[in-house]
Image (cartoon, rainbow, N blue to C red; front, side, top):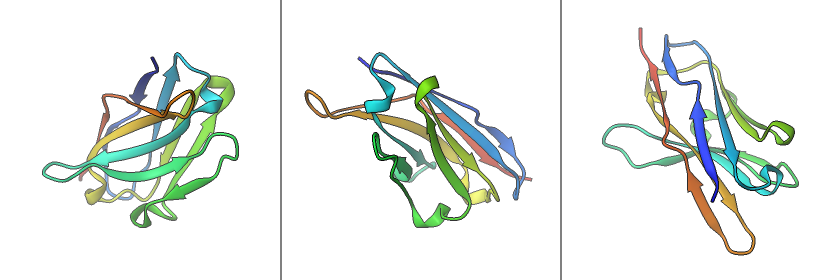
Length: 119
């Protein structure tokens, strides 16, 4: 069982920055594919950014390219999402997802952290 816990959300003004963190325990972190999703009220959960295990390859949703940066620290079993130039439409609950590939593919989710962008 992998336990996933997000932190770092809060209230920020438009144009501001926040850094989200996600810790995953119970499995070797370096072997987990990690990603951030978000869900705004009344909308479906959507992928924000992802980083693969091993290669560290990243990919981003178009709506965050150039503003958000995903990174991971395998030694600290922690995933980060640096969010800059925040917009009101970035307001959502942000979820961390961890996926283990072996021996079977299983996805684990955190409970989310609220990000509110408002003046």
